[in-house]
Image: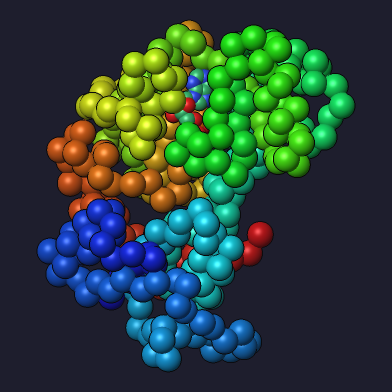
Length: 301
Ligand code: ADP
């Protein structure tokens, strides 16, 4: 098969591993920077060009589109979809997953466990927003943040109010969330391929920190999921419409609570923690499922 990986940087671990796994399994794999692609929007013959060369005869596209280029990256992916190329994750599903509020609304509608969360744009009544999620301690998150940046634990009501006022002053979108203390600074990442969890790791925050992000000094280890956690992760990916997803789960007294469903989950942490060849599982999924003109949405709503 001819597979294209949409990625800004061929040197990234995840990109490298996918290239390696694809080639090992006998495919032609090429990394294409979505930012350097341009497209013609005509009714009968959509084409993606990469540095003047039309990309033709492609069987599947693996989108590895960073949050900072979601808009243009998903447009390029959508063009491939309109050409009938199989996308590992569809542009519509990626767009959905990049909007935290939309994701939470979709997941809650289907009964997935989530931390109690409130969001507001410019409420005057900070008190009420804090009360909505059960008061302090609580977590306040900037919507634009990634890798734990802009995620703040407010231990008291006063602290919560100051942070909310500061975020509001910046005209930033944020959400407030109950603090799941019993998670003990840990969360679980379930890596979903197709309709099953193929690998899982636990991330533990470093001493004195509640955010378990590996970029913040958290450490990863192999973990065995409960059947409930496994089915929660699989359902969450399915609701989002993602074939491949990293589902982040907090272990609460009331069972698994989904924090986020990531549509471009990294391979480095999960492969190192579990010693599994996740990249090959992704390629195998493509082998089994890539058929031309098979996109569910073809870029529509
Ligand atoms: P990001 O998407 O920037 O990584 P997250 O919402 O995943 O932000 O939060 C970062 C980390 O903070 C999580 O991995 C988790 O360890 C911790 N965390 C986030 N929300 C809560 C919460 N409501 N209760 C307890 N810990 C939390």
